[in-house]
Length: 495
Image 1: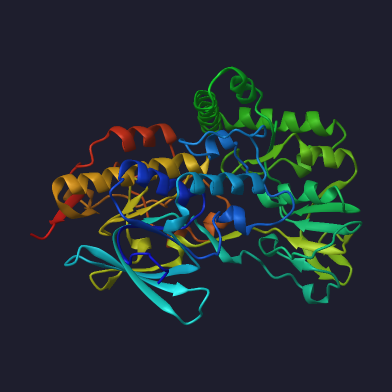
Image 2: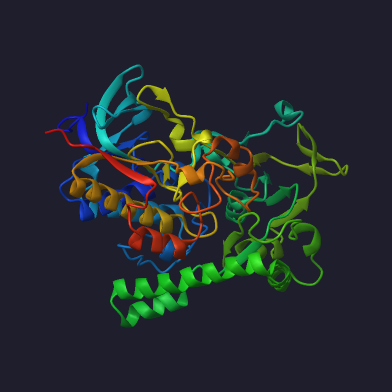
């Protein structure tokens, strides 16, 4: 056990990334008397922003909505690079004296709830001392580990790849000593990672080819938010940030709604913008026109049209084709063409991991989360005192992370007011015949489709919904009563 750290806590937060550090600030603010600890598998704060080290790593949301609601983003660039975001998270931790609560290199492996004790017992693997196990307890568990598998990426095998003479790897595991200056690079993929890596590498590589099986919608936005930067000249930082955040949330919401109600019009506008950047002679139909509607999969945001500029400068090419096999010198395509390459980067997507891969049990019975129903997208049927942070797929992640932390604090304080140790969502008799739907609907990205069967389900009526709607969630978290006939408060404090 780490020196001077308790092992019987009120709250344990899992993950010291953007969500976990934000949750700790909310907890200190709204539940100041509660003891808490943060479990972090890695040796540093930052989560995703400390793990990924590939060239150009950046946000694909603006930082006025990806940032916390309590800490203004003050940098000029609204679409920020990874180091700037990591600095923001570390700064938040240090400003709020959170680091002392973090147990680094501790991976939660098992969480066992005891109704008799009104507590979770947590089994921790010590990543810095293989084979050593620690145990701590808590009353409430707040899962903030995100949903990506840090140890494994989605990496399909390609015929002949063992013959390739150069480096071939997934960007999640970027080699520290990779020298790509003057090299021919092929990046397989067309998602957010590929859109980030390609223009960044093209600055020094001889040439970069983005090889995609099918196109993705690409939207260019200015890296700098002129309104935000202008407001900061005349208004206090907090007010300028709040106004900008409101503006951007409204725009994101409006844009998403339009893609649902009038997808063909939105598609036309998006493709017209691409044509403006690439010119009339570029084959936008082949390389930038997906077969699906906007926001059926996540739109790829690029800052200052960097990908398009790289294409126009001749530094980057986009090839839409299928791979026949990998050769000694590159990739042979099904069309018969050959892409020469010194380096191949397999940006084929991420693997999702439900609840950080933790084994949960309640009073000795293992929990199969695929059989549970999501309560308000944050708790799960018949699982006491466990809240999960899962952000938006159609807006910035932290918008929902902030709301989840607020809701968690409301739960803690309400249990104290009632003198109980437990809150558990329970299905009502009227919920018995409810239609079970996937955790996320109307979203077909491969990384979700591959693992959605493992996730909790949602129902067809409140409160068994995962709305992915910030306006509705904000009303629910801040104003709806906690006691709704579904969330059961029980297990009085002894004595």
